[in-house]
Image 1 (cartoon, rainbow, N blue to C red):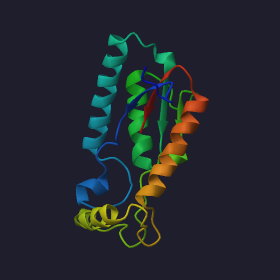
Image 2: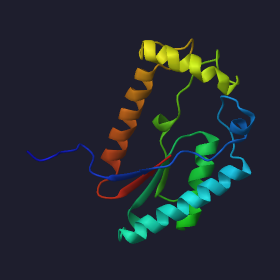
Image 3: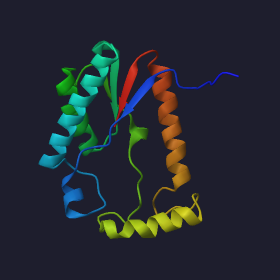
Image 4: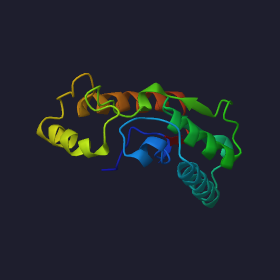
Length: 161
C-alpha cells in the first residue's frame, strides 16, 4: 500500500520572531523586537537557500500568515528577503492561523502561567480557559485553515506563519 496524504502542497512553517512581550515574559501578541526581525531575516535566507537547492521557483511560493502584528511583521521580513511583494497576490493573511487565545484570565500575565494551562490541557483537551480556546478548538481552527489553503493553492509551496 502506498502512503497517501490529503496535502497537495509542500509547507515550510515559520514561527514568528521574538516579540517585545516575549522579552518581557508576557502572554500577548505584539510587534517584533529587534532580535525577532533578525530571526525573521535569517529564516528568510534559509528558506531562499532551500528553494534554490530544490529548484522551486519563487513564483510558486505563497506566504500565509496570521492577523497578529508579530506574524505579519515576520512575514513582511521573510517576503522582503525572497523579494516577494508583501502587498501582492503571493502573500495573504489567514485569520484561522492565529495563535491560541487563552482568555482574559491569562492575557497579559507572565509566561509562568503556561504550566497551569498545559496541566489543564493534559487533563482535558476540550476544556476552555474562561473566555479562551481549548486545544480542540485550536486543532479544529487550524484544520480549517489548512483546508482553505489547500483549496486556494495547488501545486506550490506554502510558507505559513
